[in-house]
Length: 240
Ligand code: PEP
Ligand code: MN
Image (tube, rainbow, N blue to C red; front, top):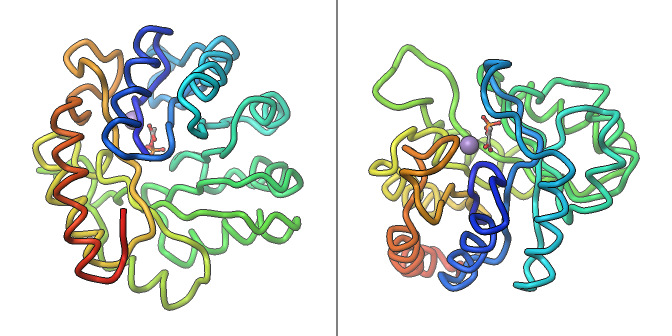
């Protein structure tokens, strides 16, 4: 999955979709509602952003993922998205999880910033318990004392989740890395460790990105990484 952090404009989203598809990724993620740490940061284009995502799906024929931040907005987001995303800051928003559970829609559940694997899996149970079995877990790094990366990528959680859960597991190396130069190595490590997918931030022009530009890959870096991942996946009997 390729992801400009946020849907910023029609031009930006269509350019991102084109880059992602050309490089061989199969799903487009773009945030229309963004849960920001500060209320003064860009919060997303909201419904206008959802409409642009639907246009991108139409034009490029790829499914779209977008985040839902509030249980009251699940219905609205469902009208547009193929896959929902629950962000790290909402992992234990039980009202939201329960509402999504009623929808039967595929959902990516990100690991909370300071959640243990057990807390993460039991959060997933809130969705499963409502009858929605289409849950995809997403490791995105956890908060530790280490500050040379944005979050500490917990590669160890991959075999742990694989041991205790039947759910598919993807990794978002971008939020763990915090810097584009660190993303490729982390992506390669987790593919080797056996994840089922990647969610990577990519922007047609990272320097102009409204949010998370520093950790977003440029189109050429994204295309190169996709090529470099392929033999690693193959070496463990998977393909990209
Ligand atoms: C994101 O996916 O852009 C995001 C905000 O991630 P997280 O919820 O993992 O911080
Ligand atoms: Mn982001």
